[in-house]
Amino acid sequence: MSQFSTPQALAHIRRRKRKDSFFMVLMGGASLLAILILCTLLFKIGAEGMEFLKPNLFQNFPGSRPSTSGIKHAIFGTIYLMILTLLLTVPLGVFAALYLEEFQTRKNWFTNLINLNLANLSGVPSIVYGMLGLAIFVPFVAQLAGDPMKGKTLLAGSMTMAILVLPVVILVSQEALKAVPKAYRDGSLAMGATRWQTIRRVVLPSAMPGILTGVILSASRAIGETAPLIVVGAATLVNFVPQGVFDSYGVIPLQIFDWSQRPQEDFKSLAASTIIVLMTLLILLNSAALILRARNAKRV
Amino acid sequence: MAAGRTSENVSSTHNLRRKASGPGVADRAMLSVTFVSAALSIITTIAIVVILFSQSAPFFQQVPVTDFFFGMEWNPASKKYGVVPLAVATLIITIGSACVSVPLGTLVGIYLAEYASPRIRGILKPALELLAGVPTVVYGYFALTTVTPLIKMIFPEAQTFNMLSGAIVVGIMTLPLVSSLCEDAISAVPRSMREGAFAMGSTKFETIRLVVIPSALSGIVASFILAISRAVGEVMAVAMAAGLNPKFTLNPLEGSMTMTAMIVNTSKGDVARGTITYQSIFAVALALFLITLTLNMIANFLVRKYRRGYS
Image (cartoon, rainbow over all chains, first blue to last red; front, side, top):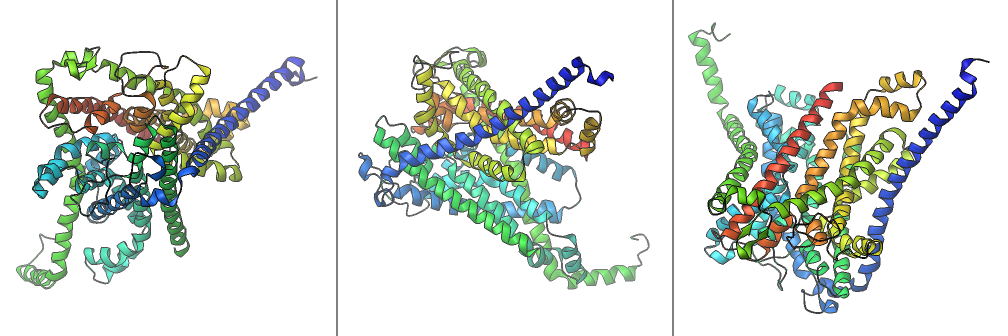
């Protein structure tokens, strides 16, 4: 009988194996719990939100009665806000990424500073960007409109969101540019093209699907943001669709915030219906990004 | 090469450059444009710092710094600007959320990196991504309609707005952050280290506990810090779950107001520029910015450390 099969040694091995399977159960349980929480969340929203998910919700403005209240203003507000934000942020973000990846390819203190800065900026709480918007963009837009009351409008909100998503847009564009094979650039430069011609005709077209995917994903993050927009004056009592950049606006998540806080149960259900609209929008955007990514992967 | 240039050579390259001036101009112009765009991110940081300091400076002229940092009461109506109740609420919710996200997130991260079969991964990964992508207001709604009633069932003395509910939903919200960063850190540990431990007769759990986790520790800790930093800066879910009553309490079953909730609640009404109320939100935002900046810098340092370790 070798020393490895003594009763004590066998008991020791059994104990170790029991620990091993216990840990496995623990991890499986944690993963199951995460999925369970997600299911509870989705089920709760689905069950509560069906009641008011009717055409009224899309055709009306917020009112005093849940049955006739809608989020028409917020749907348009969110869409307009996103379009303006992307118009402001995408050129800036892509240009900044081009500088870091194409023009200034050799690392120096400045590019290191920018990269470090981007990492820190993406960790700044979103509400701090709201403070930046409140202190700079709101007075700036008021001046632009020539009316001190028109500071807290669509334009100021878009500028704040543009600054908020800019670090992410730069990072995803950098990744997309990095994925373009170096041979493409060398080929173009060898044919006598200048750096900018190479970027415009060779690098950008092949990086475009990647950039677009990243931009869609960052837009879907931005759509859910509420706090910075409250700080720069997104409103809940809006009963019109914004007609210009100097109009007041509401956004979908803000309406959810407002309705969830009402004491009446019906308003909470209305909030759940609004959540369904918001989540559907987010899932649509994310699937678009996924399809784009898959098609791009097939092409290359 | 430059030293060997004759005057003839110089003039010929000069001509070449003149000929190429058309596209060359675009090149130089785009260099400047892209440079300005890249510099904008640095200007943003400078602007944030300048704004937070300059807008809160007049506040600290009226309210002594010690009164702000050590004052036990926040009541703008009676000119009490002590940040302690707000900071304590933030602290309780942050610690509470870490109690949820850190153990669960680590376990899920280890499971994904070491155990999960492709089929289970195919379910778990998208589920976590969905959890991470749910907007924070939706978590606020979830806290109000599901978590709080559940808490009240277990602890009947709990208030309608309570910090525990906020802590739980923020923990759920930051769980995917912890799990995905832990998974990355653990996957970066070389296979050979695991194989060494297996060859010595270790069980899988012993390998993970004694070899894999110690090697990936800096990345794992970084994920905890990032989750905590996110919890400190979280606004909507905590404002909705824990309420807006700035009361000093250590009881998580009571409601209170966090620093972020104070900012959003105060700026919701139309606050006139130059008033002390307007300045006070910048003072609180400054404190918030400094806390999260410190946490993020520590986390970034740790992440870079473990990347350097194995590349």
